[in-house]
Amino acid sequence: MCTGRVDLSFILRAFSRGADGVIVGGCWPGECHYVTEGNYDALATIHLCKKLFQQVGLKPGRVRIEWISASEGNRFAEVMSDFALRLRELGPMGQAEGIDSSGLSTRLDAITRLIPYLKLVEREKFRVPIRTEEAFDEFYGSPRMDSLFNDLVTDKLAMAQILRILEDGPLSSGTIARKLGLDRGAVARQMGLSLRQGLVSFDQEQGSYALA
Image 1 (cartoon, rainbow, N blue to C red):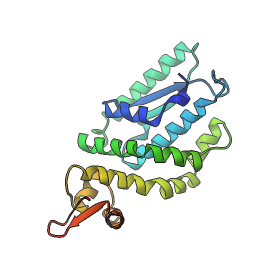
Image 2: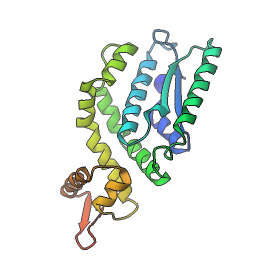
Image 3: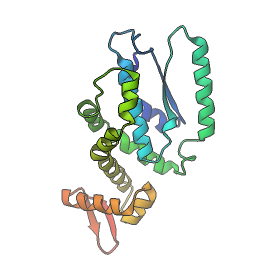
């Protein structure tokens, strides 16, 4: 299967089912078997996944991409051994980040629900015009990408997490901030916006928010 077929949802599903790490192995750049250069699409997906993980408090080193041809059996073994060692150093998913199973599920679910939006943003705003590994690494590590990500993704990701956690019952803004590791002021701002949009309601007696 071409690595270009590896959807972000596949990666998140693996983590949701207990994986501590995901590695994608693809054809070397310039050696695409399908003449689609799908390996660059996979590279973009991995870069985006890393940024999303970092944003929600998960270690980006849990996702990795490597170029390995079908004839490179020794390299495949070396890469997999190195990745396994790296995962042992990182520790169990969630536990090593200080996030309980419920919090981990909330974060992964929130990212998953944003996938249609993320695909649109990636196509319209995050597309790298030059198809080289260096160009992708440079763009995704640039201040421009950080600014775009903050403007287009950060708030929506926070909102997705908040709405997901409210599915389990009403919570105060302080509890939401603590459970998600978010700034309390940022949560209050998001809740104000959600109230205006009719997404949540506020119980003044309990001091808690609930889904509308």
